[in-house]
Structure formats: C-alpha cells, structure tokens
Amino acid sequence: MVFPPTVLGYYVLVALGRTSFVGRSYEALTGSSIVFSEAGAVVAALLGALPMVVMSARAALENVDPLLLQAARTLGAGAFRTFFTVRLPLATSGIAAGIMLGYARALGDFGVTLMVAGNIPGETQTASLAIYDAIQANREESASGMIVMLSAVAVALLYGTQKLARSHRVR
Image (cartoon, rainbow, N blue to C red; front, top):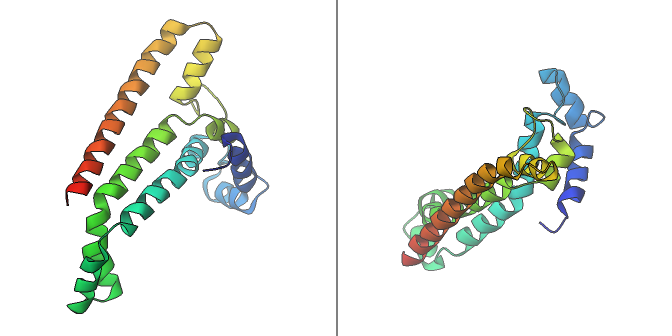
C-alpha cells in the first residue's frame, strides 16, 4: 500500500516475468506468458488492491466483541469453530466492504496494470488506460462515456460500502 504503483508494478513484473520461476512455470503450464496478457492485468489489479482488502478484513475481524468469542469458547467451541461460527459471520459486512473497496481500487488501477500487462487495445487495455489514451489523443467525447460509467460504478461501490459499514455498526 505504501509502494508507488509503478514500483509495485516493477516488482510484480520481475516476479512474474518470463525469467522468473513463477513466469516460467506458468508458461510451461499454459503456453503463454503472464506478463502483457489478460492474466497479467488481473494479477496486477488484484495485487494493487489486495492491501486495501486485507486491512479492511483485518479490522473487521479484530472488531468482533471478545466477550462473544469468550462465550463461544465457554460453551465448548474450539478455536476453529469459534472463528467460523462467531467471528467470521460477525465480520462479514466489514470484509465485504473491504472487497468492494478493493474492487474499486482495482477498477481504477493504472500504474501496476500498465507495468505488468501493458496497454494493448482489445487485449490488456483497461478502462482507465483507455480513458488516458482517449484524452491523450484529444478524443474527449470517447473518454466521457467511460468516465461516466466508471464514476457511476465508483459511486455505487461507495454507497454499498457505506451501507455495509452502517449495518456492521448496528449489530
């Protein structure tokens, strides 16, 4: 979360490139490279968004009332059962909110995706990269539709996240 997106993208590129163990293994299994492919775009966006999801999920799991966990343990539930029947269900809305925020972050990703997947129209070009290309080419009318769409998705995700956060506080 603290790395600039292009720096994170460089590290991912090195870790998944054709000369890395992971890159060679993936290519041996699938016949294609991870980098500069759709798979690379997905991995890049996922890795860029993962810290946000993890931080939200961790906060949600840690905010479960310890008295409820102790009560479950007192009633004979082991650690595994307590986690899956008490802690996880109570943290679900916070985890879902984190996933939604991560999705929003991945949807707008630019730096990591550009470094790992490139900007190949029709193959690895994401909406954010397409907007950038359209603005650079002075095709603002082309970019405006994508801008409206991404804005609507972002507002919907923010609204949903707020609703989940409110429902989590009510419990």
